[in-house]
Length: 208
Image 1 (tube, rainbow, N blue to C red):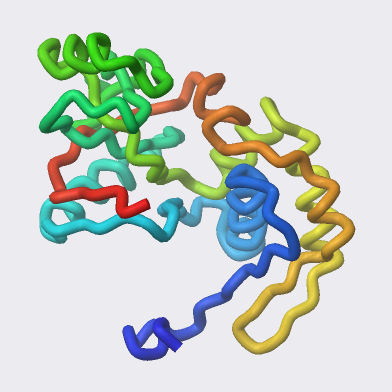
Image 2 (image 1 turned 90 degrees about the vertical axis):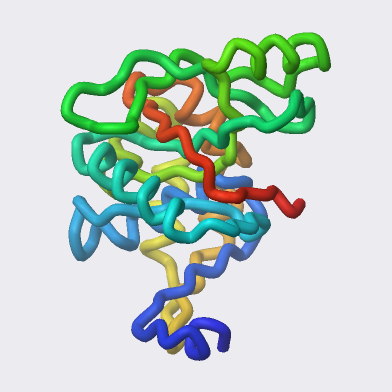
Protein backbone atom coordinates (compact mmCIF):
# COMPACT_ATOMS: atom_id res chain seq x y z
CA UNK A 1 0.00 0.00 0.00
CA UNK A 2 2.82 2.42 0.80
CA UNK A 3 4.48 1.67 -2.54
CA UNK A 4 1.22 2.51 -4.30
CA UNK A 5 0.95 5.78 -2.36
CA UNK A 6 4.52 6.61 -3.47
CA UNK A 7 3.57 5.89 -7.12
CA UNK A 8 5.97 2.91 -7.32
CA UNK A 9 4.63 0.40 -9.82
CA UNK A 10 5.75 -3.10 -10.71
CA UNK A 11 7.50 -3.72 -7.39
CA UNK A 12 8.30 -7.30 -6.46
CA UNK A 13 8.20 -7.96 -2.74
CA UNK A 14 10.22 -10.97 -1.61
CA UNK A 15 8.77 -12.62 1.47
CA UNK A 16 11.06 -14.58 3.76
CA UNK A 17 9.33 -17.55 5.42
CA UNK A 18 11.86 -17.39 8.27
CA UNK A 19 14.40 -14.89 9.60
CA UNK A 20 17.88 -15.96 8.48
CA UNK A 21 19.70 -12.62 8.90
CA UNK A 22 20.78 -10.38 6.03
CA UNK A 23 23.01 -12.54 3.80
CA UNK A 24 20.26 -14.96 2.64
CA UNK A 25 17.82 -12.07 2.12
CA UNK A 26 20.38 -10.21 0.00
CA UNK A 27 21.17 -13.38 -1.97
CA UNK A 28 17.45 -13.77 -2.76
CA UNK A 29 17.15 -10.18 -3.99
CA UNK A 30 20.29 -10.53 -6.12
CA UNK A 31 19.09 -13.81 -7.63
CA UNK A 32 15.72 -12.28 -8.48
CA UNK A 33 17.32 -9.29 -10.22
CA UNK A 34 19.96 -11.37 -11.98
CA UNK A 35 17.19 -13.07 -13.95
CA UNK A 36 16.55 -9.80 -15.79
CA UNK A 37 19.96 -8.14 -15.68
CA UNK A 38 23.07 -9.28 -13.74
CA UNK A 39 24.32 -5.69 -13.75
CA UNK A 40 21.23 -4.42 -11.90
CA UNK A 41 22.38 -2.21 -9.02
CA UNK A 42 20.92 -2.94 -5.59
CA UNK A 43 20.74 -0.50 -2.69
CA UNK A 44 20.52 -2.67 0.41
CA UNK A 45 19.34 -1.20 3.67
CA UNK A 46 17.30 -2.02 6.73
CA UNK A 47 14.05 -0.23 7.49
CA UNK A 48 15.30 1.81 10.45
CA UNK A 49 17.16 4.68 8.76
CA UNK A 50 16.07 8.31 8.88
CA UNK A 51 17.76 10.57 6.32
CA UNK A 52 17.26 14.32 6.58
CA UNK A 53 19.40 15.59 3.67
CA UNK A 54 17.99 13.91 0.58
CA UNK A 55 20.09 15.87 -1.99
CA UNK A 56 23.25 14.79 -0.12
CA UNK A 57 21.95 11.22 -0.16
CA UNK A 58 21.53 11.41 -3.94
CA UNK A 59 25.10 12.67 -4.34
CA UNK A 60 26.39 9.81 -2.19
CA UNK A 61 24.36 7.33 -4.22
CA UNK A 62 25.81 8.65 -7.49
CA UNK A 63 29.33 7.87 -6.28
CA UNK A 64 28.27 4.52 -4.87
CA UNK A 65 26.52 3.44 -8.08
CA UNK A 66 29.59 4.33 -10.18
CA UNK A 67 31.75 2.22 -7.87
CA UNK A 68 29.21 -0.62 -7.91
CA UNK A 69 29.29 -0.67 -11.72
CA UNK A 70 33.09 -0.95 -11.41
CA UNK A 71 32.67 -4.16 -9.41
CA UNK A 72 32.75 -2.84 -5.84
CA UNK A 73 30.48 -3.47 -2.88
CA UNK A 74 30.04 0.01 -1.47
CA UNK A 75 28.97 1.02 2.01
CA UNK A 76 28.08 4.49 3.24
CA UNK A 77 30.31 5.64 6.08
CA UNK A 78 28.68 8.33 8.18
CA UNK A 79 30.97 11.11 9.39
CA UNK A 80 30.87 10.86 13.19
CA UNK A 81 29.83 13.91 15.16
CA UNK A 82 30.59 12.31 18.52
CA UNK A 83 32.46 9.35 19.98
CA UNK A 84 29.62 6.85 19.65
CA UNK A 85 30.19 3.34 21.03
CA UNK A 86 26.91 1.95 19.69
CA UNK A 87 28.07 1.69 16.04
CA UNK A 88 30.74 -0.28 14.25
CA UNK A 89 33.36 1.81 12.44
CA UNK A 90 35.02 1.75 9.03
CA UNK A 91 38.64 2.79 8.61
CA UNK A 92 39.00 4.49 5.23
CA UNK A 93 41.80 3.45 2.91
CA UNK A 94 43.17 4.91 -0.31
CA UNK A 95 41.10 6.87 -2.82
CA UNK A 96 39.90 4.63 -5.66
CA UNK A 97 41.19 5.81 -9.07
CA UNK A 98 38.50 7.24 -11.32
CA UNK A 99 35.87 7.11 -8.57
CA UNK A 100 35.53 10.53 -6.92
CA UNK A 101 34.60 10.47 -3.21
CA UNK A 102 35.02 6.68 -3.00
CA UNK A 103 37.70 4.98 -0.89
CA UNK A 104 38.88 1.44 -0.37
CA UNK A 105 37.96 0.01 3.03
CA UNK A 106 41.07 -0.50 5.16
CA UNK A 107 39.12 -2.49 7.76
CA UNK A 108 35.82 -2.88 9.55
CA UNK A 109 35.93 -2.47 13.33
CA UNK A 110 33.41 -3.80 15.86
CA UNK A 111 31.73 -1.41 18.30
CA UNK A 112 34.62 0.18 20.22
CA UNK A 113 35.01 1.18 23.84
CA UNK A 114 34.80 4.89 24.69
CA UNK A 115 38.56 5.73 24.59
CA UNK A 116 38.93 3.99 21.21
CA UNK A 117 35.89 5.83 19.84
CA UNK A 118 37.37 9.13 21.00
CA UNK A 119 40.60 8.31 19.19
CA UNK A 120 38.73 7.37 16.01
CA UNK A 121 36.80 10.65 15.94
CA UNK A 122 39.93 12.72 16.63
CA UNK A 123 41.89 10.96 13.88
CA UNK A 124 39.39 11.69 11.11
CA UNK A 125 39.90 8.41 9.22
CA UNK A 126 37.07 6.45 10.80
CA UNK A 127 33.38 6.55 9.87
CA UNK A 128 30.28 5.02 11.40
CA UNK A 129 29.21 1.86 9.60
CA UNK A 130 25.65 2.61 8.48
CA UNK A 131 24.88 -0.94 7.32
CA UNK A 132 23.82 0.31 3.87
CA UNK A 133 25.36 -1.30 0.80
CA UNK A 134 25.30 -0.69 -2.98
CA UNK A 135 26.43 -3.36 -5.47
CA UNK A 136 25.39 -5.14 -8.63
CA UNK A 137 23.57 -8.45 -8.46
CA UNK A 138 26.51 -10.13 -10.22
CA UNK A 139 29.10 -8.80 -7.76
CA UNK A 140 27.04 -9.76 -4.72
CA UNK A 141 26.50 -13.29 -5.99
CA UNK A 142 30.16 -13.67 -6.99
CA UNK A 143 31.31 -12.73 -3.49
CA UNK A 144 28.59 -14.70 -1.71
CA UNK A 145 29.48 -17.76 -3.81
CA UNK A 146 33.15 -17.29 -2.91
CA UNK A 147 32.76 -16.73 0.82
CA UNK A 148 29.36 -18.23 1.73
CA UNK A 149 28.47 -20.79 -0.97
CA UNK A 150 26.07 -22.64 1.33
CA UNK A 151 23.94 -19.46 1.56
CA UNK A 152 23.66 -19.13 -2.22
CA UNK A 153 22.91 -22.83 -2.71
CA UNK A 154 20.09 -22.83 -0.16
CA UNK A 155 18.59 -19.61 -1.51
CA UNK A 156 18.77 -20.85 -5.11
CA UNK A 157 16.68 -23.83 -4.02
CA UNK A 158 14.27 -21.50 -2.20
CA UNK A 159 13.93 -19.36 -5.35
CA UNK A 160 13.26 -22.45 -7.47
CA UNK A 161 10.48 -23.42 -5.05
CA UNK A 162 9.05 -19.88 -4.82
CA UNK A 163 5.36 -19.17 -5.38
CA UNK A 164 4.28 -15.93 -7.05
CA UNK A 165 1.18 -14.13 -5.87
CA UNK A 166 0.43 -10.66 -7.32
CA UNK A 167 3.34 -8.43 -6.20
CA UNK A 168 4.73 -11.07 -3.85
CA UNK A 169 7.42 -13.70 -4.33
CA UNK A 170 7.06 -16.25 -1.53
CA UNK A 171 10.33 -18.14 -1.08
CA UNK A 172 10.22 -21.90 -0.49
CA UNK A 173 9.97 -22.37 3.27
CA UNK A 174 11.94 -25.57 3.83
CA UNK A 175 14.64 -24.54 1.38
CA UNK A 176 15.08 -21.01 2.77
CA UNK A 177 15.04 -22.17 6.38
CA UNK A 178 17.98 -24.46 5.53
CA UNK A 179 20.16 -21.42 4.74
CA UNK A 180 22.71 -20.47 7.42
CA UNK A 181 21.62 -17.49 9.53
CA UNK A 182 24.44 -15.04 8.89
CA UNK A 183 24.78 -11.32 8.25
CA UNK A 184 26.25 -9.91 5.04
CA UNK A 185 28.93 -8.29 7.24
CA UNK A 186 30.27 -11.61 8.50
CA UNK A 187 29.54 -13.57 5.32
CA UNK A 188 31.15 -11.17 2.84
CA UNK A 189 32.09 -7.63 3.88
CA UNK A 190 34.79 -8.55 6.41
CA UNK A 191 36.43 -10.89 3.85
CA UNK A 192 35.97 -9.37 0.40
CA UNK A 193 38.69 -7.40 -1.35
CA UNK A 194 36.00 -5.44 -3.23
CA UNK A 195 34.75 -3.39 -0.25
CA UNK A 196 34.58 0.38 -0.76
CA UNK A 197 33.17 3.26 1.25
CA UNK A 198 31.58 6.60 0.41
CA UNK A 199 31.94 9.10 3.28
CA UNK A 200 28.55 10.77 3.71
CA UNK A 201 26.94 13.54 5.71
CA UNK A 202 23.24 13.04 5.02
CA UNK A 203 21.56 13.86 8.31
CA UNK A 204 21.49 10.17 9.15
CA UNK A 205 19.99 8.53 12.19
CA UNK A 206 19.74 4.84 12.97
CA UNK A 207 16.28 4.89 14.53
CA UNK A 208 16.64 1.37 15.89
